[in-house]
Length: 482
Ligand code: NAP
Image (cartoon, rainbow, N blue to C red):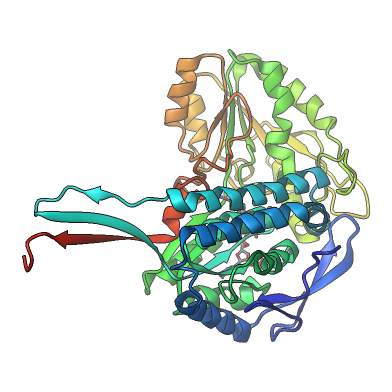
């Protein structure tokens, strides 16, 4: 594997040991240790943040001509595509993700760099007609040192979603991947240097959030935190950032609705819905895990949904036919099993799955439950595993109320052939990203993010460039001295 990282990526070089010890990585499909990386301690965090602050001032990245930054980011995208196969195998082995999905993720990361490389010269300020005689204009300037903290479910893509717009707008980035899945993010550090990103402008440190997370977030030289992860961690970060009024953007958890109206193509919705919740083994912030179905077609939908789910190819992530791999860790699987147990205790019907599948590997069968109150824990909390809860509704109003019942507001799908209803319901569902008659609503060029406790700020699209800049307004007077 040509791109295997050799340690932390600090100031343009690999750092093979660190004061926080070592992180052993367990392959989810085999349950065997297969790699290890250094674990940064506070020393290394302090060092990389200081390097980044220095590079922000001295490396001439922030003030470089747009074409210079764009060229480096286009280079990086080309290098990612060149190494896509090896990066995908690394991601598949580290996360347990099917190789086809991993390859999609790596290429989507490359597209992200291409998009923001192109965005640099299109991200414009304004000229504003003001009351005084003169010329008033705005420019967007980089914030400074950005700490990008990402989770384990889409490690490479989340790293790219943060890093690409932050670098495009001229910031210096310290990237911290999740402890369980640091490999492709560390590799990205080395590839960035090959692409021409100056020393210290982009560094990557693996390390345990419990040991270094608070220290990184509250480091006085960090001016912006771009976080994706659990709602609880996001809330903690927001509190820590408050005293220094640091800029914070948060992409957090979800419990998204999949609303099926009787006037939809019910069979197509049933056939498509398994991958709206079981893709990435349900470890997806957008997972449509609250399936809300009109009563008159409830049994028909459920039958098709269960049949399609039972046909999903669950297996070895490196087998190209696999659609669903193991869960990321033993701990995560146990956590999800706790929810299935709770569903059974509360009188839910487990219609398929509900148990481990094979060994070795942290496999858990895609599971569908119904018969629970919509306000039960299993229906309200983010499970982050292969579990869908199905519930009936009778009126459109009731469907919307069920969709909005949770604390989250990230994603969701609406299945209907009635255009007016689609527009009405899409307006009323409190989610940041919705899809009608399909289960995918993530596009590089479109904003992505959540309402309520699913986050603040928008990744992707040109919106993300605003997350990494301050607006500066300048007035040039034509009446000297006034
Ligand atoms: P997590 O436990 O919140 O961890 C996310 C990242 O934060 C990891 O790098 C983690 O490091 C780090 N961290 C932990 N404690 C920290 C602290 N006190 N200060 C700073 N950083 C800290 O989330 P996860 O379990 O990795 O990921 C799953 C969650 O991410 C789910 O809730 C999912 O919905 C959400 N997610 C949201 C989106 C979105 O776009 N909305 C996308 C993907 C995932 P360690 O790994 O070392 O603990």
